[in-house]
Length: 129
Figure 1 (tube, rainbow, N blue to C red):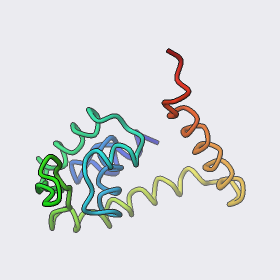
Figure 2: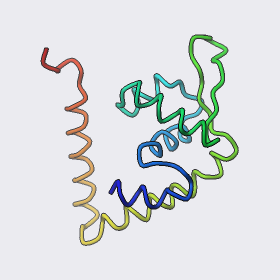
Figure 3: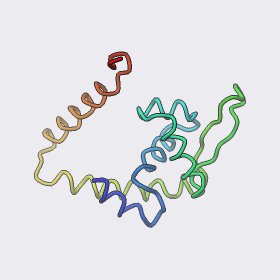
Figure 4: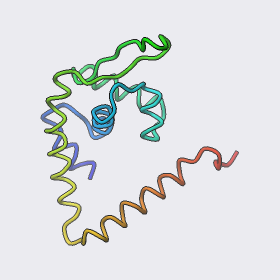
């Protein structure tokens, strides 16, 4: 899937590692980088690199949080807002390819199961010491 997504998003200079950040910001802006990391269950360093790339491409901008100047809020730029529907269409095309031959109920069960696995793997309180 990552190879297909990379190919689909190449015209927008968005890598398969950045689109999830772009789409998450689009669904919940403004959002802090810390909150974004927590929402996506991705470490802060990876989030920072992805945001820096999206910012360099002109899709995301940062503003100091007026409520707490230690944090920066992330927003989509006009270019970011313009590219989100195109990214969604590309993701839908890839998703459509992955669903071939799988009934809706089976696909929903697969996604639900994968979410449980991800949640189990991301639980910090149960990590071995």
